[in-house]
Amino acid sequence: MMKDVMILTGAGQIGMACARRIGYGKKIVVGDKNIENAKTIAEIMNNAGFDVIAMECDISSRQSIVNLISEAQKCGEIKYFINAAGVSPSQAPIETILKVDLYGTAVLLEEVGKVIAKGGVGITISSQSGKRMPQLGNEIDEKLATTPTEKLLDLDVLKSENVKDTLHAYQLAKRCNEKRVMFEACNWGKRGARVNSISPGIIVTPLAIDEFNGPRGDFYKNMFAKCPAGRPGTADEVANVAELVMSEKGAFITGTDFLIDGGATASYYYGELKPTND
Image (cartoon, rainbow, N blue to C red):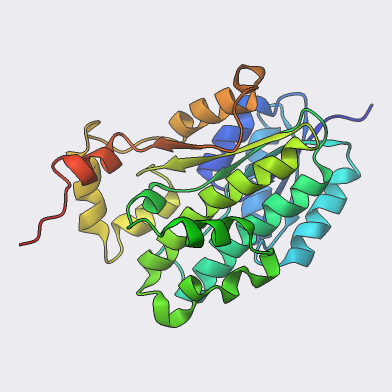
């Protein structure tokens, strides 16, 4: 008997937490650039009663994404999609961040959207970082949303001379993720499917620990210390929202973004984290 299939890209704590919430009774295909990471997540989940297989997948490559989807289709109809793949500002140079977090996410949304089953649903994990940069304006937002994927990285706003540093590249990527989800929700809707994004704040994962120990470590520690929640979040708290929007209770939710940051963004604009001009 064929099962409904879930694709999970990015073998990390947030992706696994989300997949565990709704992955029971389904075939889960987890893809990661590092196959050993994918195998680790598969082993953990299989030992907990799930049905998971691991594959190598580099989301900066369209062909790699197509290969992952093709293998997943051999297992059944693709009905669920979770993208938690990405690199952080402390892990990669500007070019890689834009290629993976921006272009790769756009290609995933496009390619999965071509095959997602009726009643299917997807989420992509974005970031609070996309909320904390100046507005780009309607014209640039529309270009980020609708430009053909193979031409995205040619946009002026994404050219190297216009990207200040890796954090700026990351912010641009996450802003693009939100706009791309809005655009793709219109396409997914034609197949009777839904897609949304989730923008976590400081969530304790190995990636976040890299940031804590990186050049902006003090900034991030100060952020969660002074946000209204007064602490970082957990992967399970992100999964709480994923479970809602990917279940029937979220049937009227598509093309939107959910900010889960303990109030850090609110504090950045109106509270203790607000930048000073001193």
